[in-house]
Length: 206
Image (cartoon, rainbow, N blue to C red; front, side, top):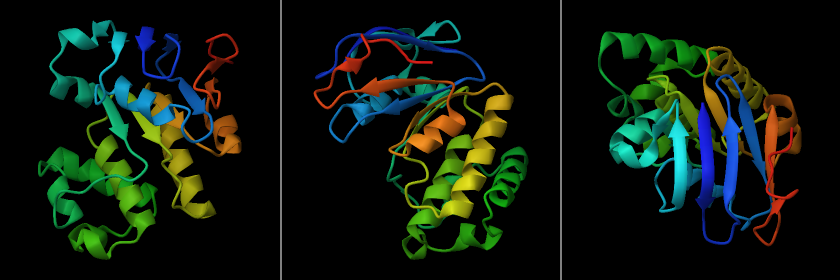
């Protein structure tokens, strides 16, 4: 469970909301309304006052590295710090098995793991980054436009995989400009106005 109490981010009123296990929340709003700042704050990648809890553990009581293992953030343009995707994944057998299963679920050939990241398409890099984020099954997943570079078929595969993660108990926060995607995937939504205010009245809409 992800619980947020009086989280203060520049340009936004204090935020309080809760997203349960196996539940997903969509964050909507135009560019500049604070969606990515909020997502990064949840993952402790951007400073913000207030309290964030995951399964009862408070952000300030946990080392940032450990927190980011629990609250995994996937940006709209994921970075790569290795020459090939394979180098970015754990080498143990259990992780390798999970990786192969996730590759198949997203329609990706295993051979892509050994290609230079620089020659992969944007959509391939985006899906491989999602696998990288999912490989150790974090309890909370924060996704910033995870299908922005994908065609209809690949988007459907990603959405099906996210539904499976929800069934397994994962909590998901999804940023998307695609309202129909939020309708399909999310149980509740947080709407950010152009001025950075929350509507209606700072509450999550179900």
